[in-house]
Image 1 (cartoon, rainbow, N blue to C red):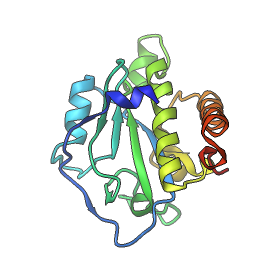
Image 2 (cartoon, rainbow, N blue to C red; image 1 turned 180 degrees about the vertical axis):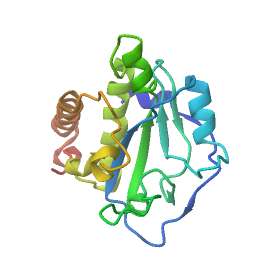
Image 3 (cartoon, rainbow, N blue to C red; image 1 turned 90 degrees about the vertical axis):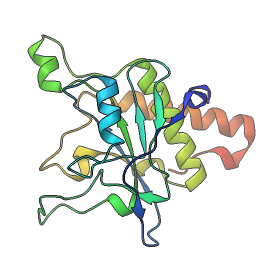
Image 4 (cartoon, rainbow, N blue to C red; image 1 turned 135 degrees about the vertical axis):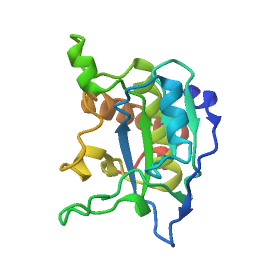
Length: 187
């Protein structure tokens, strides 16, 4: 998984105890940023007013991959800050992966559409495989932020889930065929 060799560390400002909760889910996000890649990364690793952070951040530019908060720690990336009765807090049970993305409204206004780069697709597939393999998380437990909080969130907007799932399946198959049955991801 060559893209993971680019991973750098950037210490996050937040990281709390999970209180013994088992991690069984990965939540994918699009940053929907009004700023640059550097501003997005700096915000998510800073003591920001929202206490918002994540475990991993993937930039659009090749080579930009950061680990921000250790997986053993809880971060505020997939909660229910507005206390909607039908939305559950997924922070204790999940690992968050943010992918840098220009604000979709800004992209549409400029005549484009929200999207992600080839680097981001390849990297998120490799990172998710690695996490799922190490933690025995089922592929079906990789979800969009908008799927677990459809009231307040829609991210990652413009993400090609078919491309992602096909890439993850193919990597799982390649690893299982080369290394043995233990390397196939759980469904």
